[in-house]
Length: 87
Image 1 (spheres, rainbow, N blue to C red):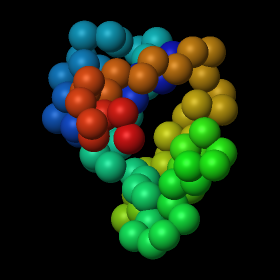
Image 2: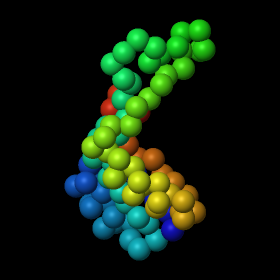
Image 3: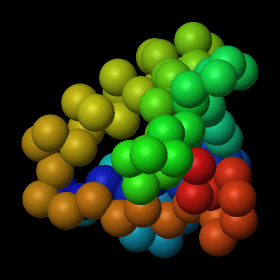
Image 4: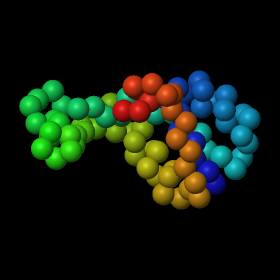
């Protein structure tokens, strides 16, 4: 089984129609994590490492995605090539 992650649930439904039964297409519903609004979220002394925070509303979606990926043969990250898709 291959898992494809997209942002939009409408895109997930459409893409799933074309890919068929060997694929599971899941939507992240947009942002799933963010930098906390506090000093120290970005560490310039450690190659600008970032401390990400999972968004509370995304917890259920992240668990569903993680469960699907654990049993997948391959993961295809098909998010939009914009700031939100890369976050």
